[in-house]
Length: 156
Ligand SMILES: [Cu+2]
Image 1 (cartoon, helix red, strand yellow):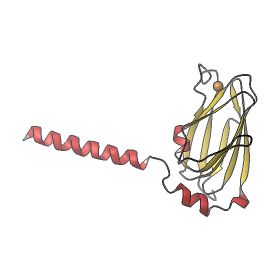
Image 2: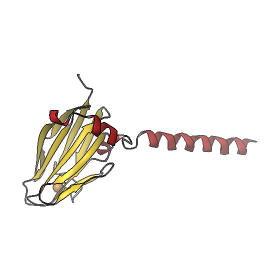
Image 3: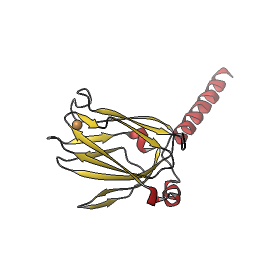
Image 4: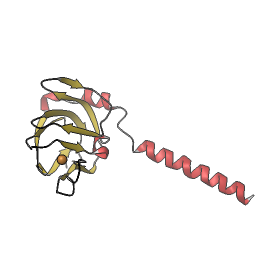
């Protein structure tokens, strides 16, 4: 009986764990949010990469406000804009490279910029919270290449 109970508890625990993960997953209705947003009100934020920093380091965003985040690498090395939780907290419209095209996906985990590269991320922030962004190359993060992305409630 005890053994059976523990099996049931384990099943229950994993059931909850799976549900919790699902709740923390990406914004599944991103397409609707992107479509409903007023892109004429889009705000542009430029983030410049260098050794070893993002400028600005901390970015504040409003939920529901459409943005274009222009990522520019002005450094002498390749750099990442890795922010797995942040990308799952936004409704992504697209990532655009002005030279090469557009990439559409439900969400991203990381974007890598070559030396002199630029990528424009079009999105609507959805889930209020604080998210880390960092570079995963070598010891760049330890050297200081990290920042914070904060999504605040609309109107706050
Ligand atoms: Cu880097």
